[in-house]
Structure formats: C-alpha cells, structure tokens
Image 1: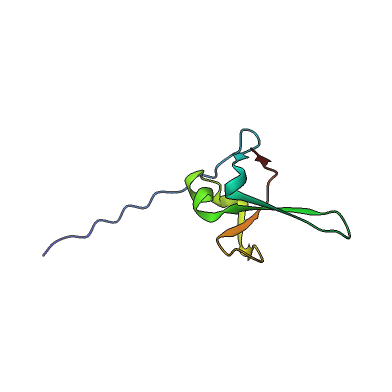
Image 2: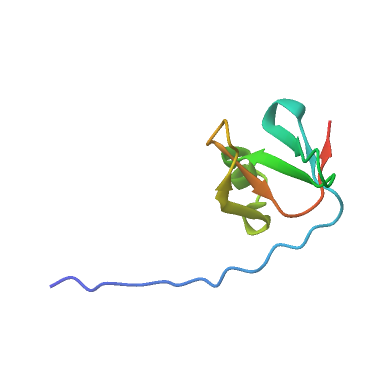
Length: 78
C-alpha cells in the first residue's frame, strides 16, 4: 500500500513596493459623474501574473467586460 504525503505551504502576504504600472490595454477606468469617485479595473489574468490578487476584489466586475475586476490599490496606467 502506497503512503500519501501532504505538503502544506503557508502563503505569505505580498507587500507592494510602489505603485503598480498597468498597461492601458489591460486596465479600465470608470469615473462617477456625480461625486467624482474613480474606480480602476484590472484584467484578472494580469492580476494573477503580477501577483496582485490580494489587492483585487473579484466580486466587483466591470459592467461591460466581465474579465476585469476592481483593484483596491492605486495604479498607474502606462
């Protein structure tokens, strides 16, 4: 009978070392006309590649494109 080996690694929280630079074609900006609030959306695939998933609220999707989610930290769009 073969034994089963389970290895559990604890994930460490990622700390930002500056403002993330996100390309224009991978981010969206949505501004409110009434109160001036601005929401930034990031492509979910890019968020995982850049290890920003801790800073993304995946429950709030972009109204027109569901592959984008709200990012909760300020970003610089380049």
